[in-house]
Length: 114
Ligand SMILES: Cc1cc2nc3c(=O)[nH]c(=O)nc-3n(C[C@H](O)[C@H](O)[C@H](O)COP(=O)(O)O)c2cc1C
Image 1 (cartoon, helix red, strand yellow):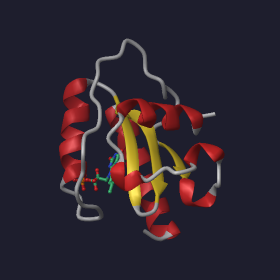
Image 2 (tube, protein in one colour):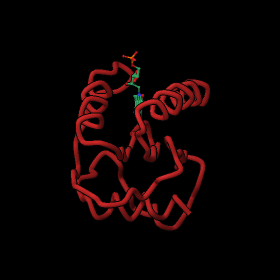
Image 3 (cartoon, rainbow, N blue to C red):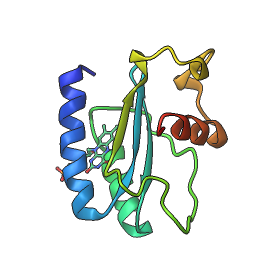
C-alpha cells in the first residue's frame, strides 16, 4: 500500500474510531497489517467484521482476543508505525506473514508504542 493510501486509511479510521470510542494501534510491514482494537466488545466486533470485508487487504487472521480492565492505548484513536521504515533490532528475523503468537504481537505493539 502506498504512503498516501496508508495516510488516507488512517485519517478515516481515526475519525471513525473517535466516534465509536475505539482505540488501538496499527503496524505495517511488508504489505502486512498488525492491528490492535480496544473498546466495547460489541463495537469492536462490529468493526472487526467491517475491516475483514475491506478489499484493501486479504486473509485477515484474529491472533488474540481478551477482556481487559484498562485500555493500553487510551489516547490513541489509532496509533500507527510503518515498520518498513525502521530497522529496529526487535524486527530481526521477524516475518509478518507467519505471525501467530499473541505474545509476540503484544511485545511488538508495546515496543512501538514508546
Ligand atoms: C488494515 C485495515 C485497518 C482498518 N482499521 C480501521 C479502524 O480502526 N477503524 C475504522 O473505522 N476503519 C478501519 N479500516 C477501514 C474499514 O475497513 C472501513 O473501510 C471503514 O470503517 C469505513 O467503513 P464504512 O464505509 O462502512 O463506514 C481499516 C481498514 C484496513 C484495511
